[in-house]
Image (cartoon, rainbow, N blue to C red; front, top):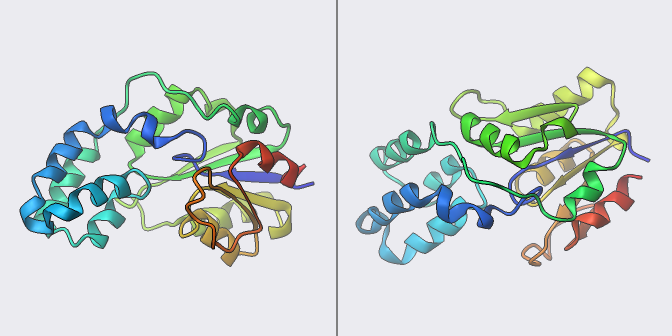
Length: 208
């Protein structure tokens, strides 16, 4: 049995697709305005990537100009979500399990906190950490290391649950922490992970 688990938020506890139309309407209008700069054929790719990755990474990947990157940052840094939200149905199996839980998510601080509160999950966690590139150079790997050091956990006593092989999964693996990749659409069939499943419920068996 593990002593603690660390979870990602977006596309792990809830599906970003369930809120993207309302959340990103203004931002997607901005992305549409970049058609001449980045190419019309790239616009839908940018929108899809924004639902999976931090904005700063998307801007870099698609070669936004400095002006475009900054305009997007200005739109997003004070954004909050205000409509009702629901976690994945199977998240209840994790939230009900009596084990120490930590939430580590990357994004804009105000936006991430608005989602956490609307989901009603704040009380599920021993601590919540938001990795905001606009505020600090800290990474998820830095936060995982801090959690271990502050609580005297050994890597083998932890499990990281997330949806992104190149983010929390990669960071955990570099520290020797077991990983559970939640992949409901089989998007990452070749990913190197300790455990992988389409079902979030299956994660419980890996840490109990």
